[in-house]
Image 1: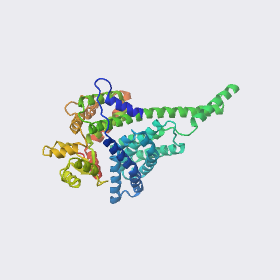
Image 2: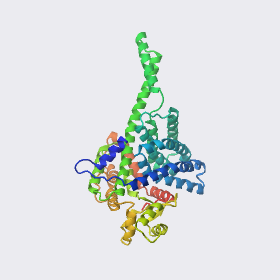
Image 3: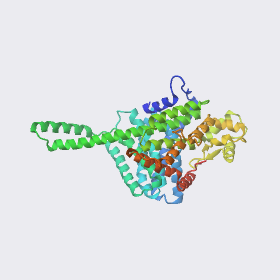
Image 4: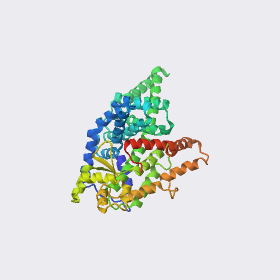
Length: 456
């Protein structure tokens, strides 16, 4: 199993005295997860092709709607990507499929970057999420190489896309696109390839050194070897530095889904202990970092937890209604729950909907309805409390919450930054301009409404 995944999971779960006890998944949960992962693998190519083949005609309203439905599908697959990378066999099984899909999606971004910045942003967010499968595969299978030509193609596409981003620069969302492209590119940059570049340089350098000793002077072979060696050393340093940043992304992303799934699958969680674990992880990974990407990823994690609501399928509702021997059919209840505002049906599938957890607090809700729906997210009350804690409007001094980062924006203008902090502060300011801008919030709301996602 992945060492990074285990590290993040074990840190959240704790160990020894005072640890959070985690019960194993039931067979039913495992079966449901495996079915969802298989569904993701089966439908993956269909939605990749939707996005890629329609890139050139995205300005057409009906075509644009189909693209947004495909993007929505990927947004709601992030949880299943997390579950996929926790299973070695699933990672091996899906590696080539995911690899080819990322390549196609990135090539489509070369069109979307010029025609629709928001679609390009969502697609790069998708490729960054999918890149965790590539990273996981090479961690699990150290003996496997990526073909040098394929790796070079990915890196060339990334560099071309970055150039286009600078030309078509949109400051409101450029910072996010920059990060997602960096993460996607890094996942390929780190992969071992079948090139003999390093060995050739070492052999060339050795040959040049021996020759220079015999001739008592550096020759062209030595100078060329030293030049290539210096370039490789710099490249290896850059890859190592980027890898550390990618590992932070991987761990924060795993943390997000571990938190969600703990509350989703387990009863009687100790909220205080979970918060303490989250605080510890923030202290170890984020608190003292002067890299803007690290803080961005943490805030993004909080944001995703704040807007998270679980999925429900018609098949799952049928199982639940059968369990309670209800007279009404699951189809009737599906429509009834939609009319009551408990469910929002997805555009990409008539068989899937999102449960609005905050609606379970409605005092007028029938107890039976609450019991049925809370089976899909067992510890919803504590999860809503955690959301409130992350918003933390009452105590901004708790430094790892959303409110505390907003306080940073307010305080930064009154202090004289150190030279090394200029980049970090500049990025944080840009990021909060992104969050706070009413104009941008309106654009985000409009685009999310097109995706069928509720922001309430």
